[in-house]
Image (cartoon, rainbow, N blue to C red; front, side, top):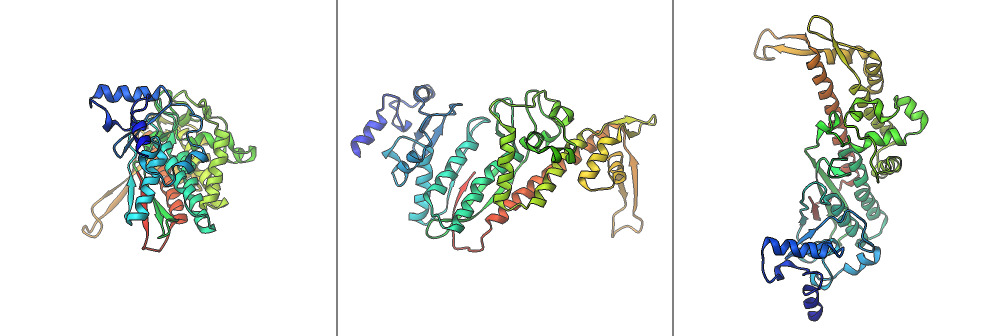
Length: 387
């Protein structure tokens, strides 16, 4: 082991652990990473910190089942740097030391944070028990990824599958080391993406998935055509992405909903809300001549109202008027509430604000459904957190 240890750090493809560099400088660190990157060696240590350089391609045999098994129960220096080694070290430390563990994955957009977190969870799922309840929990943990990616990820100019929200995933283990529950906490969903995207970017994946993947009858019921028919999807000039199969990903998303416990009726309502947002984005306004907004064409508003299951007159009033209340309930003898008409600019703002609010609440609801499937009452547990 000692010989292997020395050989690993003295590799002709640079050093595995950069604390062993003869000279520590920015140039030496970059040179070592580039030397390894050119040979498809994307992982390098700095002590207990693992650096991963995104190869933007599939590297053969890097994440095979055989490779995963090789890292199980090994010390960090016994094998080349790998995300599996970090996951194994964390898992063994939790069991042997009886202490909760956490891994922080940081990097710029496109660095590979989402994929790295998936590999950590896949490793933990592979090395733990296989009884029915443990298998159910592991399935929910793994299937939560494509589900939350569908509603929380999007194509940006730098990354075709960029997470547009923060996520802290806590996996709970019993004293034997088997996962028996978990909890997801989400942060800062980029709600503005629902109503606006920069040139060359896309809205959240789910919008394109339902248009591409729904059967003909469902598309007809939801009033869906092509992405170009909807303002919220057409303004950026990017509707399809090379390497992303929206039809297959729609199937994966619906399967994930089944696994986490979202009923067929709830799935149908989710699709209705997503489609309703698209129709709401097509509602346009014109000035009635008195600096007041009015609906230009009621067709899109009628689609929205039908899918959202509200009276079209209520929806129209919510967009064209803002409610103002004077006085303070409980302190003033006189409280007045009245509706003030909005101009065109304010009506568009109200439309987009409503769209963002609906989507944000839908996303939070989906996270709650995942957490319900992972809920556990036992408090005598260990945990591994992935941020």
